[in-house]
Image (tube, helix red, strand yellow):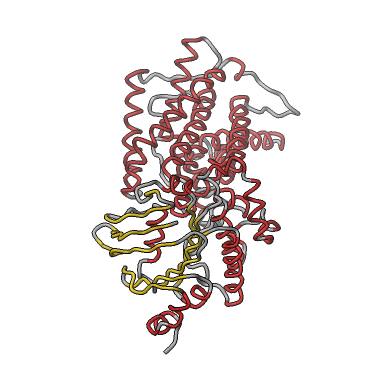
Length: 235
Length: 289
């Protein structure tokens, strides 16, 4: 479904990603693991079109997308839930959701999409007129994911969905992620801490200093010595 | 002085304040959405007044009716001004746009001087000079039209920002433009429409000011200062704040004039604003930080 082929990405003169390749198949949950500054968010931003690779290519469902604009990429069916949630705290839950459909054709008739996400997140239906900034961290993460789903994506990138959340809430977030996969949304899961991500995904990639250094089925990565040491907190 | 006279002053302060608020909405939109201090704001208002004057004398119609042409024209000017001038300098930081609008201010003033000479002009019509008696009060018709227009323009912008996709995008972009971008909202395109909307409000303000007071090619800067007072007192980024800020300016000006004489009324007005900012540095309805 998504093919990243040897991309090199720069911020100005500074190279951040080096010959990065990865593949995500339809229906999979794929983990992208890496520590702070490894280039995970840069890779996410490049996939959604916020950055463009200098060399290499990105294909989505057979179509080359690495030169397209963000709205065009959204229309093809890719959405992102950014790191740190990035909600519009000055606006209501419902307004945040509506803006999630801004670039897609869904905005003409968003009732279906709203009903879909309210089904997945009943709490948001109750809170739809509340200001997004006034909700708890867990609720805000749910809203961020729901906003990402409002364009009815085929492929959803979740950038650090468990960041800053209590362990109990993290379990809830992962429950939702599995539910979303059951709705036939393919997922790229980006995390610093590998435990939950690998337990809930089909395969994984490890990014270090802008390069993919390890890849393979998730259960294999969970047993990998290097992964256990660096990303599962084991000595 | 009788109590009825004081009430009369307060009433006219309120009406004048509405006119000031109306004058300030455009500046408030630029400051709140694009985060640009539009120094040429007042000159745009005076430009609209001169456009109205030309149409009024050419077509022999009422200044109100001239808005049917002036308002859409100013929308287009605002859209193009943002698209071809401001958007280009926005990535250079916050100083550059201010300098550009300053330059534009001078260009507009000189252009108006060239086309219309330095003579005093006005859009005052006979029906604005009648004396209204209302429960012993004398509300000024010249201020009242500004006040009513302010409420209508405020309600229209408010509903637009609340109900339409574009309006919601105009609130989202200044809050977090990168997050908006990731949802496919192009800041620049949103800014173009916001600038159009701002100058639409400025057009209405310019015509109402022209119907209330005489104007010259170089009257603009005075209205920037007044508008700035309303925007800052009310809090940057809050249209409601600008409305209330306008009322405070109007009251301060009228009551200051009564208490200390017309020579000191403007000073009193800005002293009130300094006191407000001392108590609430972010302005009455502004967000902290």
